[in-house]
Length: 444
Image 1 (tube, rainbow, N blue to C red):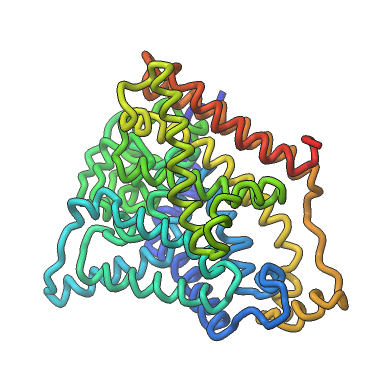
Image 2 (cartoon, rainbow, N blue to C red):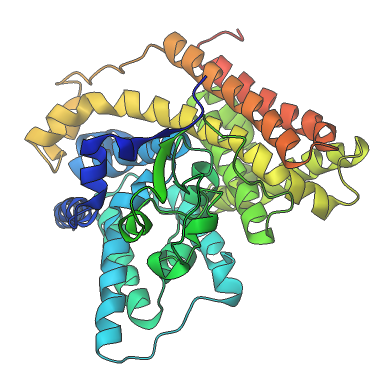
């Protein structure tokens, strides 16, 4: 059975990691794509009389960002860890802005207090999810362009006034998602079993490389590997959710609330594929208003609170916690594995149904004529890569994997009482399992 393989023993990998251009050259390449997409998307809105979802698929900007890149980030983060952070251009911009500010002797603050705990990240992530039903950010190229521009601007400004990768830890809207989804990835930076003398100054995030035993905050940048003596640090491949990693038994409230919020968004995404479930899920907010903002509030606030009141209450009944707050915190990280599996299932559905539009979008980046012709039935729409039955089976396997890993995480985090939270985890897992099962028509 695979235990731990050090990739630095393979010369090409070692040469890549120790190369002075790594990972900067990859970040620059991705930044060029960011800028190009922001320019292409500027000023383009959904044409009148054309289905908004169809136009999003034919427009290169929305197709690449929301149909291909975002699902891939969720998948890659879950299985490989925070690999996206390794090539993220926003980290590059923020770090260089911070370095320039230091050379100009500008006063820079370390990230601390509520910002360091991720409180602002929760608000930014919730706002981003609200923008999906609120203004259809994922379907309007101009809004996507504004999102890219604002992300770049924020990274630079934060880099000027804060230090030690403050943007990545306290201002990136997906920082907690990468933290939570990426902690079990098979790729990790770890000190050698024989010991390591590298101190925190070698890590831009001010982690302690010699004591690194979790992947939640490591961006896989390789700086500590470059600073270490040969053999002191390793880039390892190990089993998914390795039992050698440290576990948090009581994660912070910002992290807990993030898991609560994202579970609501994933429910919204999964029910959206099955029309009957989608109508049922949105029945309550539509009784109040048909506004997308009301639907967004239901998705990221009211529904997840109701869901977690149920999960927390069951945990209390089974003796898994002494109060509701403790129940939520002890459930957060194990349940997050099920939530991530559901998120990947939706990502698979979106990727396989959008990827066929790529040749059309590449030939006509604005997607205007393609959308008009497809909307008028003058051009056929590309078929999804997976049939509903195949998609459903793959998604059920994903959720089943998530349930198994989640139960295992509950036990590893608390060997004495972890089993008392199994019922709550199973409730969430079975709920998601039934939703993806219905995609293939198995519940008729």
